[in-house]
Image (tube, rainbow, N blue to C red):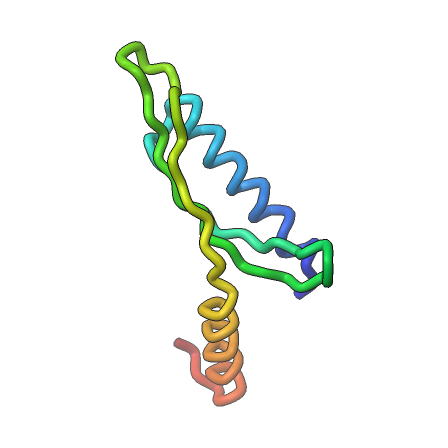
Length: 91
């Protein structure tokens, strides 16, 4: 699958989830998206986790989070899926 077809919707969803968390709709966010490295064009898969901290009035004061490279796990999942399809397995 081409990077642009796969990445853009996932990146939009990731950004939307973070915005909703900051605006108070959710206290946390957990998203997965593809990122194309400008230096070499390699596509990396990332998982973005975060928590929004608010003061007593509900105003966002801080956001704590981490972005993890999950490319190896994603590639393994894709390889398993492809092997199952090649073997004719449905699940």
